[in-house]
Image (cartoon, rainbow, N blue to C red; front, side):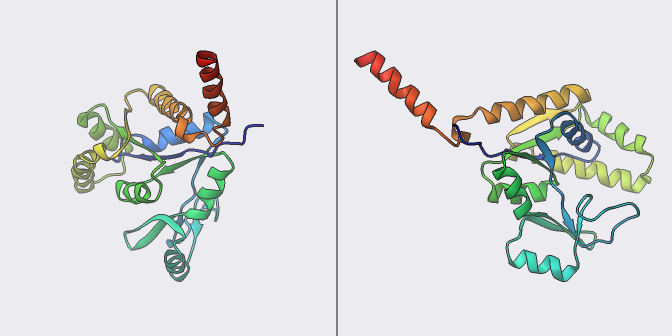
Length: 213
């Protein structure tokens, strides 16, 4: 029997307002084998948040100890709090054949790229900068100053698209989700991802016999 292949690590990034969070949510809803990685953080839980579900809530000392133990695939400090992706959880799911999504910023994605060369890196783009601005405004949670900051950051972030394997324009949500699903399906068919190559080797041997016997 052919052994189970490892899952695929899918890293999704993009500017605020591009819709990467919504795309990830839809992917998980539609695909039982895709899981969203739960991050660790040193910030306090917000009302309704559950440890191990929304985040793994750690003290600063616990987080720093895990950093020293190389316990994170990536980590960063954001607004005075630390956030990181636990290595052991991701490895466990991948070994079980589950696909894992990391929805993280560009800084984190570049760290992951150093640790997981076999990861699939997908950048979510808005159809236009005008549409991106409209989406951010529609949230109704931004001041004029924060809106301009997010918009300037978006321009900077889009310059990193060349660091990724794929770019998906989120014009229509369902189409964008379908494109990401197609990318994952194609990646699973790559020969270098097949754990047990005995079938491929036997096929090559059979063809050789047929040609030269």
